Amino acid sequence: MNDRGLYSLLADTILVIHFAFVVFVLFGFVLILLGLLARWSWVHNRKFRITHLAAIGVVVLQAWLGQLCPLTVWENELRHLAGQSGYTETFVEHWLHEVLFYQAEPWIFATIYTGFGVLVVLVWFFGGRGKKDVY
Image (cartoon, rainbow, N blue to C red):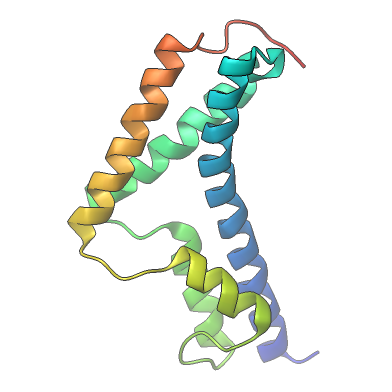
């Protein structure tokens, strides 16, 4: 594999990590809500709940500071090093980008992220705050 191929592979890897982060934040919240309603004990795991709260906190902070996600910056730099002017149309890239990246004004994203962050904080306080260290 040449350097360009390696950079492209690394960029794809970062894209998958980025997608996994988004899935963790979104579906983690849905699972927390379902778990609280169904009284699943694992949703009170303090490490899981703090990690989830921190993850959305980072997203909200970046949105308010007007910063791009470091994963996005790193992926774009690697794509540039791979000689790609934009995203290529590999299967993984195409579909992950369709899900992750959509066009809107930055204030809309900041509002959405903040609203979601507020919901996470409310569930943190009213949903037990990870009372137990359940595994």
